Length: 295
Image (cartoon, rainbow, N blue to C red; front, side, top):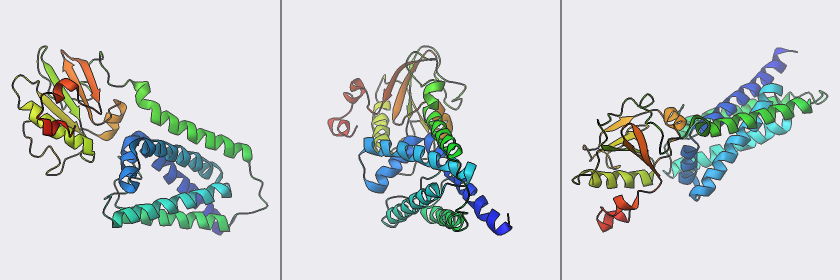
């Protein structure tokens, strides 16, 4: 084969690698991509999560045939259309001020929408070049394509489900001190609350404000906050110096099965209680009525 024929095929395989990386990066923190879809389109949370999982599985299913077989043409066209649609939606939302990053590559790459769209444009050109040099007389190995697509789906499902295999943070388990050495735990059998919050989550910001009020009350257990990255001023934690905050990578939190917002009550080195998405009623009862309605 000539160089002119080999390079477009190599380009298609490179697109497959990028697409697979994008799928697995989203699978590491699917809720983050779902939150991105909510900001992008205003979808209901449950629907956004379902679509997010479908995008992860679909990208992986398309990526593997592109890598293994540099095709088939149908996969190239589907990928081209998918990338084009996501690029248009991302740029549109960015121009409206709804998003600041593309959300394409999970916690591993945080790219601005223009940079992400430039990468997508390069992928579209590579796919188009691959289609123009396709030898229509070449036999399509349907079995290899089917196996590759199945392998992509299986890989995506394994990554999505990995936290459940490694053991979610739950009541009765030992506190994962080795995974979260940054959190300073109290000595003895006193209760300590560790809250897992993300700055981009509106509910997390409401939790932060509520915990700031609760931590100032007498006899309330000490509160520590774990976050994947720093909070902006006014987001709920900047004005709460009494809430010590540590930063931990999203991948580590993903392996621990953390779903922000979430709070764990730790007692004597073990997790006594875990609260996800909603504060316990006993804590809410301690809040002023106006604040309680925000949680």
